[in-house]
Image (tube, rainbow, N blue to C red; front, top):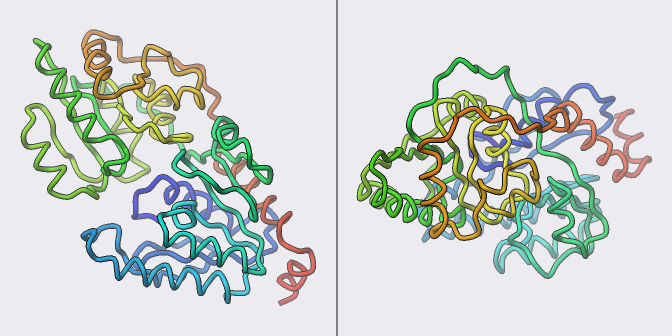
Length: 342
């Protein structure tokens, strides 16, 4: 849960603000999360007893192991009717198999939430949620699956903001997001540009000194720290383009936010399969090799783009209603009646 800045945490935080009230809710919602990450959503009980380890050195595996043990205990003994869990816990390395086994043994119905292309050799024993139809097709062997869009709580765009001569990356700064490839590509780009654009990074730095030391070596690059999820669109308006070097995305919210802000968005071609209205000329297969040319094009490009995308499908109320309906369908009717009379 927020303030952890993973996309799934932000998405589910938006949903919980609405799930606790309205939608004819007839079930209890309990969220297991890290300490300090709970939010004041009405009708939601937060158990923020997990230890924070994402922001600690990799060598501190003990905290991670304790968290997994606590998750297993909750899965097996919480008495929940439906368990909604992110795929990162279920399929994360070998310890994820322990979670997977606990989910199979649990009497509860299980929903596994998948938002990228990291996982293989699974797809049975549970129900699955995908954030885009294209991602669902990618995992075509999974039968018990639904598509529920990413919720976007968008404010009216400040179209009067004049873009600067910079491009930006928004998201968790971690190796599998391609940030090092982006830095290498930008360094190569500056060698051939007479009027280079700057490159700014926003997000939680999970790489520590490895990232900041590399940033310090490259002229024109700056790490700007954290920006709250609700302010991302306003911040994007200050830039000519947004760059997402990751190849594993399902439906990246930052690309949608850049489109809403009518700015260029450079992304891997796999993202375009989920969002076809992104021009092919804005995409790449090899970030290190192709991004220098794309950034060069941005120097003289117009800053205001119209993508013709229907953002209504991401309305938080509509998304929340779909998820609530899935919960109702999964939970046994007898259990829900007990909850209403308790």
